[in-house]
Length: 107
Image (cartoon, rainbow, N blue to C red; front, side, top):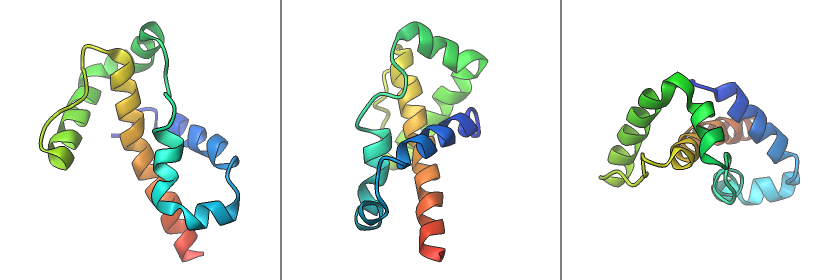
């Protein structure tokens, strides 16, 4: 799913500049957690609802599939728009960080 991937990638790019190269190289396993799990991406139900737009049900399905595959059950509270946005961003962020680290290893 690519919904707002460009926006999430920009968020990553804006965040990664706060870490020096040595820290990144020594903490690759924690990079995703640091950027996408130590703070909320989207705060406020109204803002989150607007952000989800007409893709809310596609995003919910995407999250369900991810959580069932990775955890064996679904944990996200789908009655909470903030939780939906933040979990979606967490998942897409995982892919963005993975791509970033792979490029570091190639370089």
